[in-house]
Length: 150
Image (cartoon, rainbow, N blue to C red; front, side):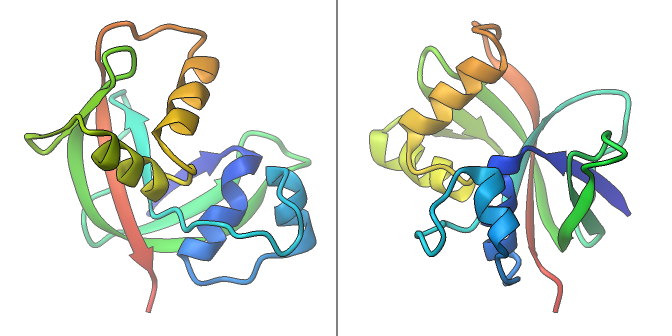
């Protein structure tokens, strides 16, 4: 099993993507109003590094604040559906996964929605904020897609 940790804004979208109920705490962590529309998140983007990433068919454990002993909790579990290489060109505004390049606004928005954002603009802003404007060239990593456990 491979475990991944997420920020509060992704807890409710992950739970929706896994078909799990959303509690008040989950809305609060993401800054959502209770009962608001939350799009399902069923993928994550991770940098290449020393640790092994999930493989298709493996169970994923998805956590909030995994490194915090007082705030950490398990969001849920899913099954890895696919893993692809990914390159994200945030400033040039295009994404390459598995040899396919997404450049149109429609394709970028559709990709961002799968990643728990409203659109590409929101994903791009989050990315720039999180990485402090770094990654002027491509971000190179993996795209991990999952599905609910059945």
